[in-house]
Length: 67
Image (tube, rainbow, N blue to C red; front, top):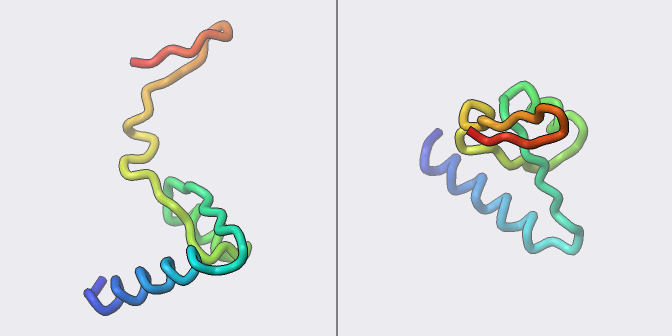
């Protein structure tokens, strides 16, 4: 992505934040999911920095474990 592209996207996001509508940013972990959300009309999506690889949580017998 060029600096011009980055600047254009930053300006678009700034305009979305300054609008009269509530800006809902769904969080997605992969490009396919981002494409699905874009096709549903979301103007922007948030992304997880490290995504599911950094998640080490699981539930066993109703107890949440973190490793």
